[in-house]
Amino acid sequence: MADKVTIAVDAMGGDDAPGVVLDGVAQALAADEGLHVVLCGPADVAEPFAAAHERCEARATTEVIGMGEHPAEAVRKKKDSSIVVGCRLVKEGEAQGFFSAGSTGACLAAGTLVMGRIKGVARPALATVIPSPVRPVVMCDVGANADCKPSYLVQFAQMATIYAEKIVGIERPRAALLNIGEEEAKGSQFAQEAHALLREQLPNFAGNAEGGDILAATYDVIVTDGFTGNVCLKTIEGTSKTLFKTLKGIMMKTPLTKLGALAIKGGLKELMAQVSPDTYGGAPLLGVKGACIVGHGSSNAYAVKNGVLTTAGVVRAGVSEIIAQTVAAGASSATME
Image 1 (spheres, rainbow, N blue to C red):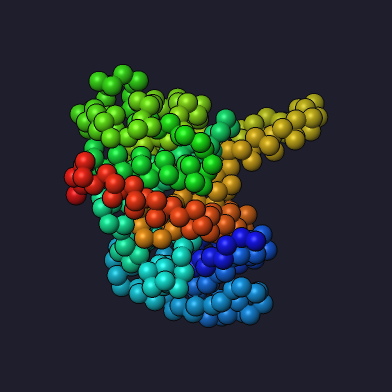
Image 2: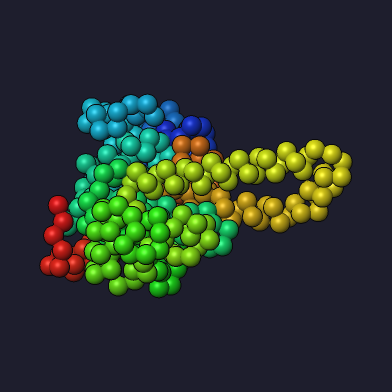
């Protein structure tokens, strides 16, 4: 029997909320008998669903943070929004984790301001599993911190390594710094300083990684600043969508190509599953007190299900606690702001 864990879920997060969120939560509850969900959202959405599902309770909220709102301002003003209430449940101990497919910026702000940073963590960072057809690759940061100091990247790498080990299941992950060349003297002054610190303070540091190493899964963990990581991630996702769309158009062009498509249909489905970001359901905000997973705005029910299950997995694996221990152990050897 799985350990019991309580996860707060934002019923209003995502382009197709609340429908796909409710479907995804129902699937997650069915898949994990130790899971308890606190569904945060309008009473007319959360209460009927909770009444119809065991191990689910409603927490009625009166506000919703929209995708276009200023994240920090919305979090400060809309204290009864589903995102803020969900994070507050974690802070107050009524839940151990929070999942939302809503505004990424609002989730980052609420995770940091409401749940709070782990002591010693300079900046919480957003990690994600890159959809490589070879094997999973964890990248951090992918959008939480556009402006970084080289010292931040050491903690990003430490936190991402823990996530790679405990959640993704990568044994002895090798971490690398995203750069424009393999040589340690390559890149900007920022990159060179980050390389030196990583080499000195990170036992599993394997050197620089170039862009071509990401999908090739040459390394298990890729560390970079949030601006570069976000551009890189969206480029990969956009390229993948364009290629599959183009390939589908070619295969549906003539009767002969349609026949060929039928022959490789199974293989294509397998490939699409391997590169789908829905497999893990979201990106964890590492460095906050508790589990916080941010799903994609276009999440479907399958992605929501996996996002909720991943959040529960982060709690059960004690990722936040291990990060706290790791940061505390390294506090004497590095000064973070």
